[in-house]
Picture: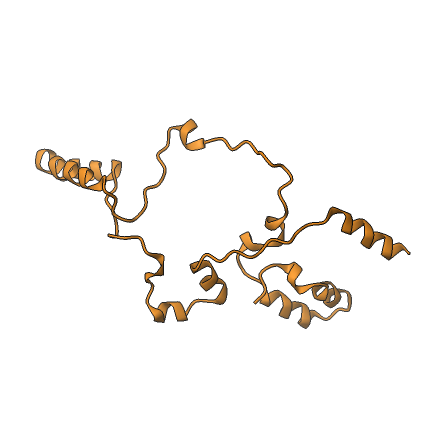
Length: 152
């Protein structure tokens, strides 16, 4: 299974230069369809300390709650029950919009049935187990050596 185009080596370039469109299509079909796995997203980070503004704090937005039941959800559910008793369905709906209820008791991504897992592609199975492709170590001097060999 290929993840990045650099794993094909020079096969993609050779297929294009020699006008072998079927080989080029074959190598492209081997590549992952996930955009975030393309090689340009796995380049070495040249800036060690980037400024990461906290947009949630600046805009005053709450982060999305997890789907699983949390200990503080018991308080929210009691508040929603009280709102329903005092204000009816409209007050309950407002409280649910402000404080969402948990959707599942525990958030377990590995809980998929085997028949669902067997229908997934290899790339989706890799994402399910959260296996990241290894990053290539970039050597900035290698390009200079390659260019010297081409012009020699």
